Image (cartoon, rainbow, N blue to C red; front, side, top):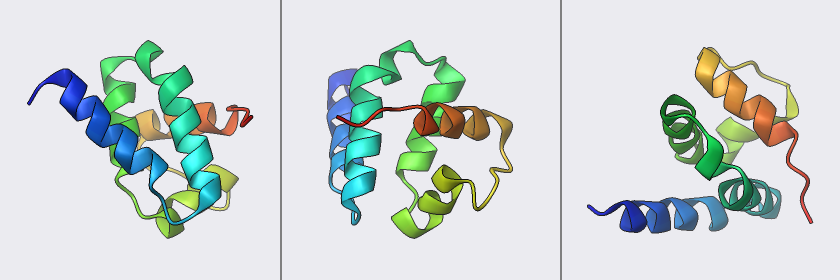
Length: 84
């Protein structure tokens, strides 16, 4: 699969969420920050984007902690995203 096709699939997963807040957060992060991530952080973001909103939202809001250190780095970055 081509990189652009993979990115389009990831974009779809980030912007077609059950929660509008997650659409805006993940979609905004993908557009503004994804290209600057390390390969490990990019893979962690993909794993997070594959999570259901009800699993991911508590991580974003700090009600649950990430067990994976790289995912925790990405979640911290997600918390800093400013949604327009």
